[in-house]
Each structure stands twice: as structure tokens, then as C-alpha cells.
Length: 349
Image 1 (cartoon, rainbow, N blue to C red):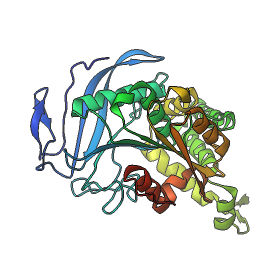
Image 2 (spheres, rainbow, N blue to C red):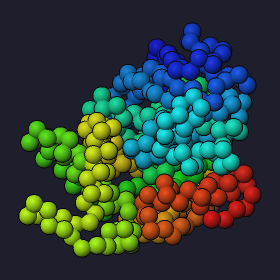
Image 3 (cartoon, rainbow, N blue to C red):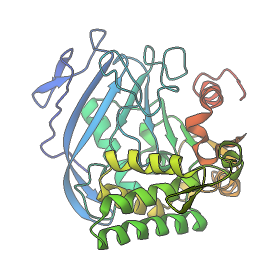
Image 4 (cartoon, one colour):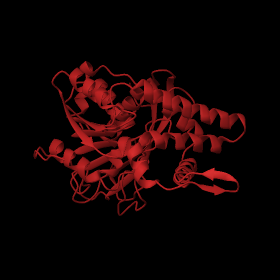
């Protein structure tokens, strides 16, 4: 596997040192965050060799321990707000001052998933994401990660990275993600993709994608949470009955459509279902974090994963009404687990 025409294009001006003739962040003078992109030649598992561009963001000192952070298929390179890039990130509460992943003392690395821009209309495997990360680390001159912290799809990618590139990684934290997709969850996603297909047939791509996202929200959360938030009588609006949760679902669909290309959604949704890892092949210590009531990654799958790791895994179980979205909502408890793993302080959630 090799880089072809690798070009780093940082968007921050506070950079020194060079790679392929362009600046790279290095040393104490680096800004608190740097963005850029690289061109790679990636041999893909199901789509042949493709020339692609990876967009990345790095926060923290160049000489600090590096941690790669990856979220669900909606996540992206901007994990948290910084002085340089002040817009809200997808995990602001987890990557922040005073947290285990404090950018003042940790080099936090993230990227936009292969296919996230919607330009790649081909099957994408989690092995492709793992290999792309290895190429990005080469370009950034990061020999070994202190940890890979993956949530949902990111946990699946982290497991693949631990299989394919174990020498690049000390430990993995896999939250709400397992070695294979559960058939029930795959059925949910198949129906979501059919909703998109129906929208496309009617020249209503946005409506189809919004409906798919609304279905997804029901699988991410729990009946208990909906019972607490939306336990009010339905209303009759324009002669139709409208239930209490519909405003929430409409907003979720609209927000997703505004930032997600249809092709990206379809291919990354498929990528979850293509995912397979042999736990015995994982070559690093793994902390598996599961949530009771997660409808997409049942606790039994996490138990099977830990058993398959043959002594290299430990299981932490959380109870939360937020289901699969617990990693985004129960940030204090997730941070305590990260502290126990990365700092070795024995903290418990």
C-alpha cells in the first residue's frame, strides 16, 4: 500500500516543517488545530484501487500522544471546537479542556470517512477506512497511536484498524460497536435505504433521506426516552392526527438532509452491514463499552466480542435511556471510562 501524489494542504497558517513540499504541523509553535487534506491511492476491498482525497483535522501539540477519534457515519473531522475552528464539533463535550481527551495534552486526530463527500458511488468496507487512516498517519508522521477511540461505526473501523495495523496502535476503546452488525440492525438499515430509493423514484431525494433519518432516530434511542419526552396527546392538524414526536423527527430529518449527500448516506450505511472482524485477529488490548437497551448493538454482541478477544478485551456496561446514542449524551460517564483506560487511574463510571 502506498501513497500516490500525496499532498498535504493545511488550512492553518501556523505550521512549520514540510512533507511533499507543503507545510506540516510540528513543535510547540503549532496552532491549537490544523485542517488539511491528502491525496491517496487506496486499494479498496470491493471497488478496486481508487484515487481519493482525505480531509483531516488535528488538535493539540505535535509532540503529545496521538489519539484517533472516530464517530458514527454522520461524524466528521471536526470533533470539537477550538480557538482556530470555533464552530461546534460532533463531540464537544468529550474533547475539551479538563477531559481525558484534552487537546492541551493530547494530539487528537480525526478525518472525514472515505465516501463522506458523496463522490464515491461504490461499496465501501471498514477495511478501506482502516487502511485510509494508516495512510493519513503516514502523511502526518505519526508512527503509533496511543489509542483509537471509536463510537458506533467508528468502533467498527477501530476494530479493523487493530486487525490490519496493530503495530500502529497501543489500545482501542470501542463504544457501541462490535465485530459484526446484528441482523436486526441490518434490517433497520435496509428499510432506511429503501426509503431513500422510494424518494429517488419520485425525484424527491431529500424527502427519502429525511424519512430514512427519522427511522434511524427510532433505532438510536429507546422507548423509555420517548415515553418521557413525548407522552402527550396527539393533535389534529389540517384534518390529520399528528403525534407528539413528529416535530422532533421532522427536525432531525431536515438537519441531516442539510449536511449529508444521499450517496454518502447510502454507501456508509451499506458499509456498516459489510463489516466483519474475527475478534481473535485483533492484535491490541480492547475496552468494549456496551449499553443495556442498545437496539442496534445488543449487549450479547459485545459479550461475544470480548470473549472472542481471548483475554485482550474488557467489557464495560452502561445503563442509559439514550440507547445507541449514549456515547453522545452520557459524556461524563464515557469520559470516566476513557480516563481509566488512557490514564490507568482505575476510575469507574
